[in-house]
Every structure is written in structure tokens, then in C-alpha cells.
Length: 345
Image (cartoon, rainbow, N blue to C red; front, side, top):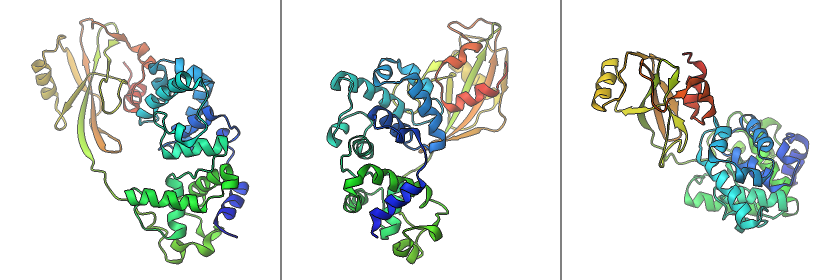
């Protein structure tokens, strides 16, 4: 039995019961694929269910405010996905009369929809014989065929797409594509794959050559940048605080945060007060305290944020202040959300 039939047999026996597999509705399949980009199924499932419940159709999502979408997305990270999600919903309604395109080429014109997502929607919903290549597929193909070309190189991306097309089952593309991804997620896992009970073990090159822990190869292009964030948590006598919206490009675009003071390194109390004077703070600080003695290190893909929360109390009434009890209404980064959960005024 060759590669594809073994994948299909394994899938029919081991597939997980996931809600987006029970439908061919491209809206729901698209939602699941965007949510599951760089997100594990266990983490993404509650978000998928919340989106489907809150926005049952693409029209509902298109009509929502960006703030609503970001709030529902809060905690998933990579917020550009949420903004692209919203933009695409509007595109589908405005340009395609609320119906998702049925071809791989047209699907790729949608915001945030690349090769993988277009292939997934086209094959899962419309049986278009287009192979999917995600992290799980790279791993399975690289190990089984013993390919040591870096998966994130230009050569590797092209090679694995062609290899995926060569070995796919075009007649059963929906189950095959879902099967090979599921196989990579469960059987041929990144760490501790179940090689001894694998239906592909007899012809797996990586297993034969003891390269399972080495493959796939990935070029390390990421250089981590350290940044130092000081959040100024103002509190006045009426229990009001201050939030500001992050504007422009960069992390957490359009999300809300406490006023931010970014520095070259960790700060002491006196340094905070001095910087506040230099910046001509319009409100007098009566008490200043550091909430977390050790900086919270929040790790993003290309940067580590060393974060301190400073509590600034004043008897002055904060202009445009927000009642603390309403702070949960605003979409904020998970770093801020975690602080809000633990801090008691």
C-alpha cells in the first residue's frame, strides 16, 4: 500500500471530532483555519465557538466593529489575523455577494489568505485537488521522504509544495488533506512521535536513518529584540483610570493599554518620577508604587517585552478617565488582561 492510502486509512480510524469538519460551509472552515494559524486546537476551539455564536454568518462579521472583533479575539495573539479576518468578511460581502470564492486562485485574493488557507478552503469545501502544506505536512513529508531542504527556504517551500501535489490523493482530496495534517499533529508529532505504532514506519527514511529528531530542517532567521515597557496605571479618587489606544503599525495595533513609557532598561521609582516631570505630566502624583518587583517577560515571536506596572495615585480627577469597572469592555493585549485580572484597586 502506498503513502496516500495509508494516510487515508489512518485518518478514518483516528480523526478527531472537530466542529469545522462537520461542515462544508466555507465561512466556518475559513474561520477555523484563520483561528488555528499558530494556535493549538485546544486553545482555538473556544474562540471558534464564540465567533460562530456571535457572528453566525459572514454578513454578521462584516457588520461588526473592529473593536468587537478584537475583543472576541483577545488572548489569541497575532492580532493582525483578527484585523485581516474582519477585512476579508467585508470583501466577501462587498465583492462576492456574501459567497466565498470557489477556486484556489480567487481565494488567494482575500486578505490574510495565503497558499495554505486557500488550498484548505478549496479542497475541504469544494473538492478542488489542491494540496495543503502546513507545519504538520512539512514534518510528515520531510521525515517520510528524508528531505533535508530547509522548509522555510525559497527552495524548500517550492519543493515541498510540488512533493505534496505528487503524493496527494486527488480523488479524495478533502479527507486526504485533513488526514495528512491530522497525522502530523497526532502520529508524527514534533516531539515524541509514535514511530513504533506508525503505519508508515517500514518505508520512513527518517526512522531508518535515525533522523526523526533532526527533520524537518528550519533556518533560524529570528533575532529576538529586548524591549522594556513601563505601564502607568493611574487611579484617581473616583476610581477612574486612563487607557490609550495603540495606533499605527507594530504589535497590538488598535488595542488599548495603560499609558506606556518605553525605556532602555528597567526603571527605579525615582527615574519614573523624573521622566514624568520631563514629560510634563498634567496630574500630580501623590503615591507611586511598583506592582511587580520582578519584570514580567512577555515573549512574542521576534521580541521579549520586559514589563513593569507602576501604580500612580492622585486626588485630581482624571480628565477623560475611565471607571475601573468598565475596563473589561476594552480589547487589550493578554499582558494587560492578565494584570487587570489580578490587580485590586
